[in-house]
Amino acid sequence: MELNFKNINVLNLILKWFKYLLIIQISTLILSAIFSGPAFIKPKYLSWAVVYPANITSYSDESLAEQMKQVLNANQIRDHIIERFDLWNHYEIDTSRKYALTKMHRIYDRSVKVSKTLADAIQIEVLDTDPVTAKEMVEAIIQEYELKIKSLHEKRYSETVGMRARAVERKLNTVDSLKLRLQYLATEEGLMDFGAQAAEVVKGYLGTVEGGLTKVDKKRVEALKERMDEKGGELILVMDRLKYENGLLTNMIAAYDQAFADFDRKETYVDVIESPFVADKKEFPVRWMTVLGSMLSTALLSLMFFAAFDGIAIKKTT
Image 1 (cartoon, rainbow, N blue to C red):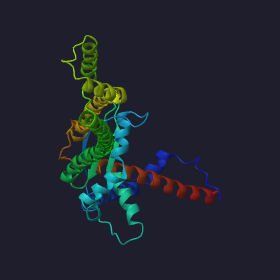
Image 2: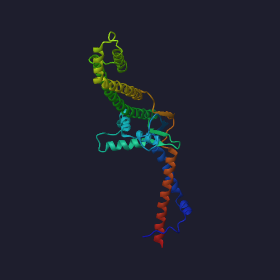
Image 3: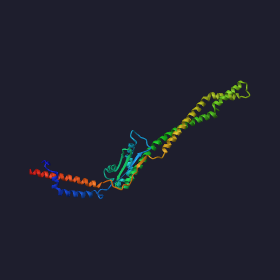
Image 4: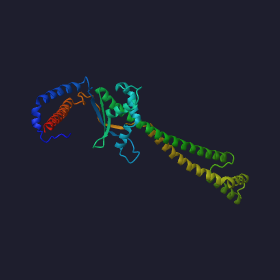
């Protein structure tokens, strides 16, 4: 059976069923006002903060704000907030029920929003039945972000410190071995200053040629010349290598000191532009919108019902 609504005038329909429509609207007004009240729907309060990332480097092609948003939405921060504020009890979720974790994540995602502003800042919003809790959760999320970035930086710089320390240790071993060899050449071979000792040998030979045998210890000069012929090249090589390695060691120690300073530095990773606050006015529900929406939807459904009723009546009379 098809209903024909073409002959039904809306104004006539309203006038015809006005008394019933009025009763329905008054009933809807009263009921929606009651059921949208705090006894049935707990009011929720909104707190937020606007922040910028600080003292961080980008890990990818994403902007620093996008990177910050990713970290703030990370599971680790969410889980810490759930534990810190005992949200299982706060949201009244029975952990023994099936899909309890899924329900927790769904409520958390509805209550906590992280978004990027037009100015490329990050806005953190928390909606909660307790305005103080909402504010403290925003603060805690910022703190957890700081701790997360700090741990990432410490891990990265600790690896650098370890690498630099091992490089310095290896270089120290090289320098120590060269010093030991130089000490051997000095104590066992009597070679300390190649230039000065070479000049002494030359003077010895010149003194012998000139007949100054009484002034020159020929055996000593010959022995020194023999040792210099045998070990002099090694002495020069060891001294030059030691000078070179000491220069490298100085640079490595400077690099280690800088890496340790980076690891040990105390700095903030968030610039707070707008601090979170304790709201004095509820954000949800907006009672008048709930009542108005209920009345409009009820009026529409009522008109459709009465139109259908009249349509059926018209169909029967034709």
